[in-house]
Length: 366
Image (cartoon, rainbow, N blue to C red; front, side, top):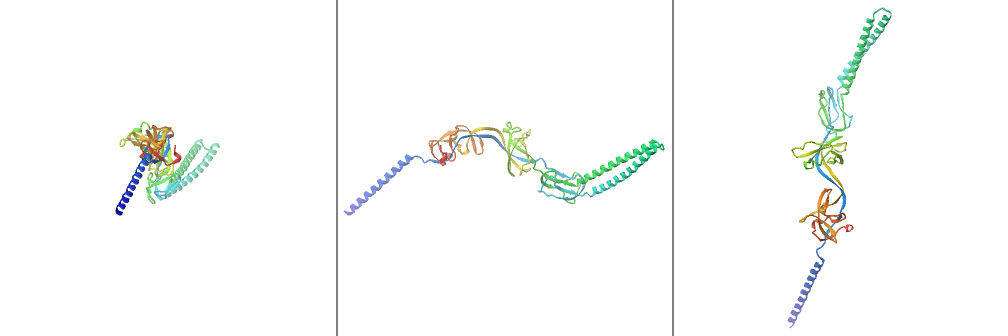
């Protein structure tokens, strides 16, 4: 009897526990059905009109327009070259010195010739004066005076030539010191101390970055839009400076190797810009004062096409859009949205039409 009673109690308890579990499971299912899918956490932004530029990018190179090679203007032996490759030089800085000994000797010889002619001219001047006095007293004929005057004039011309030769020699002496014609960097030292150079022999090559020219190829598909005067925005890896300039000219022929149009622009005296470096360019083909722009991550691809999710009543409602220009991580929307629409940014890729959402930034709630 006791055993029967124990089995009955155990069976009763098991039934009660089973009934309670079934009730809890049904309650949870009803609660989940009531609550629906869990909202997706997103961030949002408001669509606003903003200025937009239609640009085309290209990569080119920089060339120096001022890269003089200093050459010898007189024949002489090199005494010293004061610079080495990589040295920075300033305009007017002494770069090299040639031996002026021969020109100094020539100058002393010319000065002696000047002194000789001056002595002869002084004596001839006295002769002219004496002959003129004799003519006045009618002791000699006028022909003697005319001859004396002619000899005096010849000596004067010889003196002028001798003095001019001194100036020529001094000019050559000055050319034995070679100065940098512009600011720049020494690219190559071609001769060194002790070498003999002739007129025209190169000594040092200097690269100046004061005036650079950019050559940038752009695809032929934009050739009809490119023209002189369009604004260019340029950057280079050797400098943090971004400069704005304009297209100076276009090369008239399309490059056969890559079917591109070469755009030419000048860069004047910008710190850090170097000849031979690459240059990144953006040519501004057109500008619009107002365009609806949204972040790139707001536009997602769905079977219906490109869509943006607009926030309405705590739901993400799908809106099919047409896109335009892209600029700095933003996409222009030409159709499908209105100004002041609130659209999903982060999390848009996980949404479907009319999916529930939760906005992470409360201040952005519409």
